[in-house]
Length: 417
Image 1 (spheres, rainbow, N blue to C red):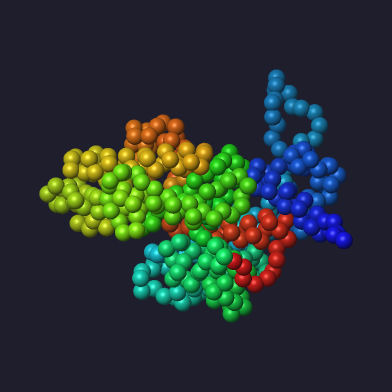
Image 2: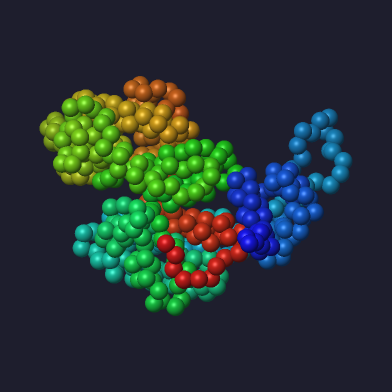
């Protein structure tokens, strides 16, 4: 005979609902929680009071008055707002990419307390990367007088290009991080370890930094630019997706029929036309001290230093040889972005590692308006998680796995994948 749901499970579910609502809306009152979750006020009071006593939630003050008329204040007591206690626990995160390992410590609100980075190349070993993460985590905990009991966990995101190098493999169609998590099991001072794919985790962190805004409830495509181009699909349900399948399919999409060739990809594919190396190869055909003086000077004669923003600057500075190449590159970007918006019904497309300043981003959008539409251009955003703060992806994984999904009842266990 099957048994019903246990009291512990029901408690966890109710707490999960409360935390999810607070995460989505920002500070909220007990009255509003009761209405949103269709749980009686008495039950909400009991649940939230217990969470306040544990330090998970905190009362942060009265809600502001709304709909004031004739300068008269409404009668009755104002609502008391609840929010996640920023200092309930602390969170460690790390991201491993082909160029850099970033590590950081933050609060429950994703406020950064400490960070460190290690420049990487083809000769940087797996052992060196792991040791850097461990030593940095221990150093940050010591600096803040924290033990592993004060830390929810250490979240590690691995960029797709580093998956094989970090001994992460597919098992039954799912990434298996067992070998990587085992590497951290011998360090007694390290809190529970959680691993995941960095692209999806950075997409998650980007929305965590916008909690309480409309962005949290929007379908989003998170687009990572590098030697490979990957996307993560982030939906309001905030659950993990097998986005790598979409990533590899995206790189095979054709944006310029009959375009450039790359082994293993169709002619004119996203990989062959729009990866960082592909764009640099396209501009290299006109790149020289005589033909592109501004761009050549800005990059000290190194084609591998050319970025999208420098291409825009070169066009503005009068490097006429660059103009047609840049227009063709942006036509290809317009095709890709238009198709992503249509295929995934994306309300937002977040650009990650595009290295664009505010002015450069405005230039990027102008091209998209010209070659795609105003609608597609207005859906574009620059990621809040960039470069030295990429580790926030790992922090978001810990918060998801060992806080939100547990109803604020963390599991002090060993490594998780």
